[in-house]
Image 1 (cartoon, rainbow, N blue to C red):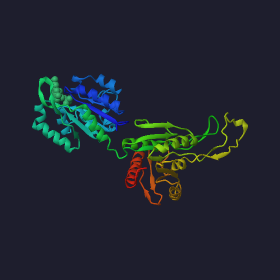
Image 2: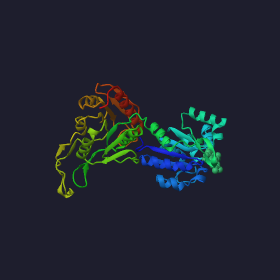
Image 3: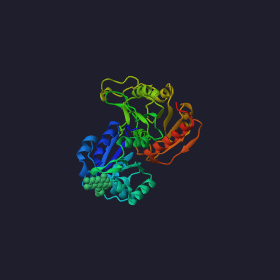
Image 4: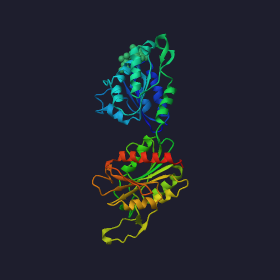
Length: 398
Ligand SMILES: Cc1cc2nc3c(=O)[nH]c(=O)nc-3n(C[C@H](O)[C@H](O)[C@H](O)COP(=O)(O)O)c2cc1C
């Protein structure tokens, strides 16, 4: 499960460093995003230019002096997984002791992502009690150690210590990335506020930015889903793993959402869709001199209703922007046929439209209401997926 997943490949100073180039190429072929971080010793064995050419991004080789003032924390936060291959005895020791004096070891220490370590060294180094101890320590941290194989070693020697077969390393990484709890799900997310044309320059719109939908889409990708994001808002800065479908009006959004819905197992409808649109948008610009225009309105297509009626129907999460009481949200959850309704009070200061934070309540069609505190939209997205995953564990997948 590599599509859109972000892999940091750490390369250390052993003879097997050249095999890391093959690994980088394989991850890219499998549609992962790859960034590399090299120790100074690694550069004695393979050039940074090789990884730059393979991955499209310059490897991080130093903590200081680059354009990023804190490259290790940037990489650490970006990674879905870090794999250090090959890992020298020296780097094993540093990882075991939290020693973070170079860009690679600092990145590993700074991450919350899973870490995979593939050691390669001479047999004597691998079998030394210090190395055995260091392996045991990093396994206690939860790192996955892929032991070296037996075979020909540098300098004509033979024994245990050769880097594990790169395809084995790919398979182990695949297994770890593939454990996301939305693995196998195809998720439709709608986002942003639709725009209904009055004339070529004016529209009826709303204050939705698309940030909530973007957070829901990113979180779903991170948990292993394939995501289709139909958006009338700003595109996410990182489109990794997301199929982005830009739309403008409610009609555009309905067409795109209804086309994709039958292929999706879950739909999260965060978009703020206009309820009404000008019946006859003007093809020429309205002029002040013409006086006050009469603009007749008509209802827009009900995007949520159409997704609800699609066959097969995805597990359906609706959003409701409310002001004040949530009474209408409870009613809406029952009426709209959703499995879960996320109601947000957009009148709360620092929450909702355009903000990075949101204060929501999860409402079920049975009328259960769970209020969540004001939190970043990324955390709201996590909370939504936690509930969806939990609900889908107790009901069969559609
Ligand atoms: C020719 C040569 C080959 C080496 N191969 C290995 C190796 O395969 N595994 C290992 O642990 N160290 C190997 N070393 C030693 C490491 O390069 C050395 O310990 C270095 O400090 C590792 O730094 P790093 O872990 O920060 O990359 C080799 C050294 C030389 C000179």
